[in-house]
Length: 502
Image (tube, rainbow, N blue to C red; front, side, top):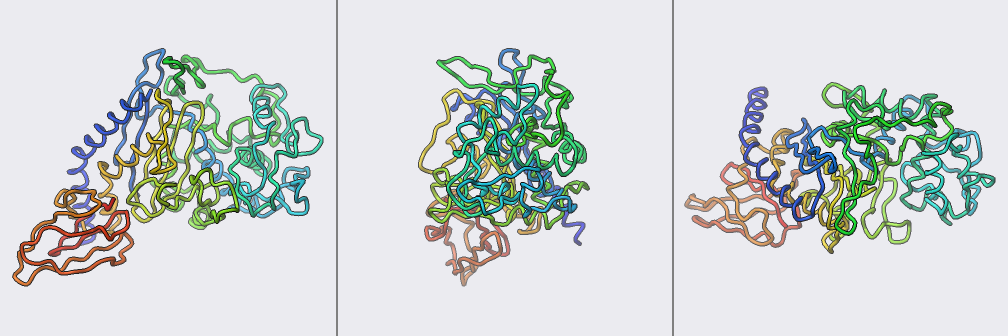
């Protein structure tokens, strides 16, 4: 019986896919046009894999190269989640203690001058509670890290005698108690990966993350199989698209300052804070590993306990315990942005009460990778530039273009099948039988034909009953104004229907 049910679910899954995917694609096209998007990728995935994979626009404007599903991007800060996986792997194998003083790992003293008696740990770096921030010299340090030969040692920005050191590199707070999102935390973590593994950071991540998953992705652009698959990132200035990074014109770059690089001296050379190149479809595979608590498609990168540790709350905004970036960052794990779905702040999918993942922004690119462990649905959205600039509104702190994509996935994606695949709902959940859907007030449903009326039950996605009442014979309209925003299941006459309360 169980095998038959799975086969039937997959058949239904395939049957519904084409029409809904085309609908999502049409909305993605409209969003792209309205925002003057250079190019973009959108992947929707369930627990079992990718269900929708879209690409639009141009990967390389000057050479007229179309964006494809295997086009790669410099994914910006989502790279931090990849770095976190590397760190957690080393901790899992007892090569790194997340609560050890990083001074003993790096070989020199790293102290907050405002609170020198409190040790700074890898756990604090992962959760952005180390009190080390991107000070006034950070940009110059990174520029020298990328371009100088030899590359400056990381100690040059972390120790008082360093050429890039400043006390403004630290918050006036006790390490471990105050959140401040900072790229430097992950530059340090990349160096710690090298110190602990004795392997160059880019090599470690390729060997232990990309290669096992069989994906063409790396912190080193020279590892990519085809440089023409790498999208150029753009900004539009005075009506003209200007390339920002990765404009290699089909020629693999040569990095002269790597020949004498000393492993463990400055992992920032490989961009652990933002330099991972990856396609949206391959990035979704990494996040599928996380959604599935460490394993996907026969490949294990982490243990379930390591994933749980990444997802567990390390910091939550209470009003004065950190910089919440206008409401975007309200909770954080270990390398994971914990979405609280607070109205007007960190909303991703409106039907989800919480999500896990990471966002990115750099050089004109905006990127998002988030998943819901309850609904078993995830989304990856990346674009390489929007001509109108990144707009905001009062609905969410995410940019308007991101909100539009999230809403398109919620309302026009094939995500109801994610619930079917994991057994939360029965295999026959007719979405179109309820209208309007989504709705903020009333929903029309199939009429009740029973003489004594019909019992209606509405449950949340976690199975919790939120409403129950009896429907009179012939009645077809129900009031949902008292429900909170989100996705629900309505049970009527032995049939389950999904709907979204806006």
